[in-house]
Length: 200
Image (cartoon, rainbow, N blue to C red; front, side, top):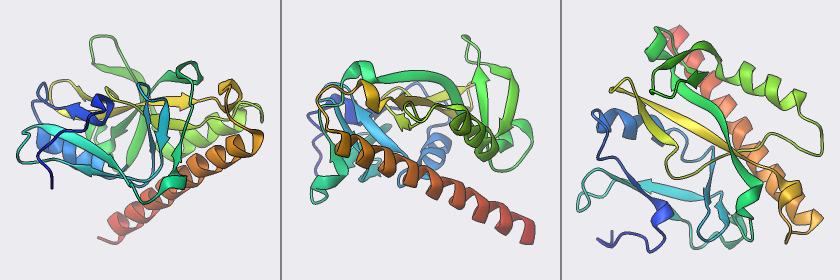
């Protein structure tokens, strides 16, 4: 692949500060096909992309949108429509369990007091949202973090289609469906992993 980093710096995530960069890479790969990525500098959301860890650029995560999937890129996503949630996805191993969990993280990057199973927690949040403001999680640069100097966690942003000023109702619906479908595929992925773990 090219040794050039993306001209859009939002798509080159730095892992220099990670003590366990390999663990972070392994963790984040499972979201490559299940969570969309937001770039505030160009106000775009990418639903189809690949993650690379180029040898020429040590300790970098590079996100490359699929140039052939034009309809999987969403344009004119106002920055004000994408906000931090304070929710973090953590690996269950961090708390002696399997699968993924939702957790809060304290300002000093230590684990908060509450952790709940990922799918159950997100489904509860999704059900509690009004139809006009669905919970639509996306990733942005800086969301991959390291907790307690060893464990990767993934912070979630959310997009609010109602706040996207230059998007038609049809395109808002298409974006909502794309993010929701990817989230459902993540739930299914985790269910399969849990079943395989039980068999093993």
